[in-house]
Each structure stands twice: as C-alpha cells, then as structure tokens.
Image 1: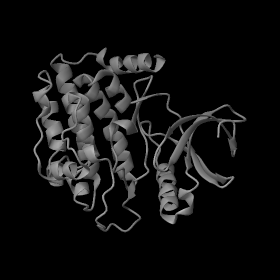
Image 2: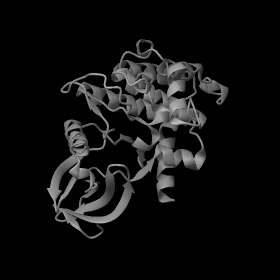
Image 3: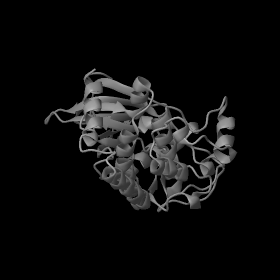
Length: 296
C-alpha cells in the first residue's frame, strides 16, 4: 500500500502488523500532519465478529482524550478497506527497550507507573477496561512521555452486556487470574496486568513463565511469584510492596482503582524524594534515554 491514499492520508511505510491487520505511517495530504493508520485485513472484514471488534476499537479510542493515550483522529472506509487514523508516536515501546537493556532502573519504572495510572483512570472513567496492558502497548517518546495504545480487545463495560462467556482474551504473561479463569473482568484486572508489566520492567522477567499457554494461565491463578526485590536488591521496600499488592490473586486485595494506585505511587515518590533517593535529574533520565534510543 506504499504510496496509496486512504481518504486524505498518503501512506509512506509499514510500521507493523498483527492479527487484525497492519499499521502504516501516513501523512495528511494538505497539512503534512503525520498519523498511524490501522487497516483491518480485507479477509477479516468479511467476518462480522472481526469487523465489530475493529469498530469497537474505533468507538473506544474516540471516547478518550488524555496526554498518556494515543489520540484518535478519524475513521473511514475506502477501496473496500476499513481503517482509522491515530496519533503517530515516534519512539520505542517498552518491549523494545527491554530487548535492548534487559531491565529498567527502579526510578524509571516508578516514572512509568506514575504516567500509566492516570491514563488507566481516564480509560476506566469512560467505561472501558483495556484488558491487554503489556510492554509492547506502552510507547515511550523522545520527551519521556508514555503513551498507552492498542484498544483492540478493550471491554466497554458501561454500555455492553457484562456476562462471563468463558472466553479468554489478553496476552498470557500479563493476564489477571480472573481473565485466566474466563471470568468477568473489572478495573482491578487492568491493575494486575500493570503489576505484571512493572514486575517485568524491574526484574527483566515476567512474574510467571510456562512452557504452554495453559500452564501460564494456571500459574496466574494459583502459583506464587518471587518478590521483585529478589532480583533487584536496591529496590525500595515501598515499590516492592506495591507491585506485590497489584499482583494479588484476589482483586479486592489490589488497590481500589487507578486513582488510589496513583495516590500510592505519588506518596512513594515524594517519600523517596525526601529521603534523597530521587532527584530532579532522575525525572529527565528516561526522556534522555528514550531520545538516544530513537536516534540509534
């Protein structure tokens, strides 16, 4: 599709592909504004289930407007293709960063969490559960800003029937126990997924590993993980405790919601700052590292 037009957008290069279709970098013909264009695979557009899922993703993104969430521009149908345009974020996702350096400093992980928590609050306030929080869905731009993306399996719990169907959706390494059991998911399910992400960013490994998908699901439901401080001896106790709280099997033992989580993170950050563990320079480190990685 390189060089093709979809509406007012001219496609320049492919950015990635997945189970639903492909994502391209495009430019608005008149203004020169860049966008990431997600195109539903034409063969999937013939199946009502996939088309509805794609349209639900569009509806979900259209509701959201937050500095830590990719911005939705518009959707369209042209030349037999369903597509939508969203903000293009120049940077690397956290999975790519982990591939380069195995794990992040705990100060950087705290910075990430402080940005993702408000984004999740915004998502949940609009009646949406993301259900697929993972490193590859968190993009770090050159200013050190995190952007949450990919609402392809998001659940609109305020406007749809909330019944357990036994279906399991999400990525195995980052599934909440209730997702693994095929049960109803809620706000705290996303917090568990975020806990898995923070654990991986801190330690360089997922809280649970398994040879098969089924084994991973079983471990999320019943197994105990090693505390993060086993792998990160200098990890402050408060951060270690919070990650373990996020990974509680019982949703009621996790933080009440994303706002409560943010308040805990903010309190931890201020306490560590008072103790001299954080400096103003630390807040710039992640941005500098991101800019260097993008340049490379």
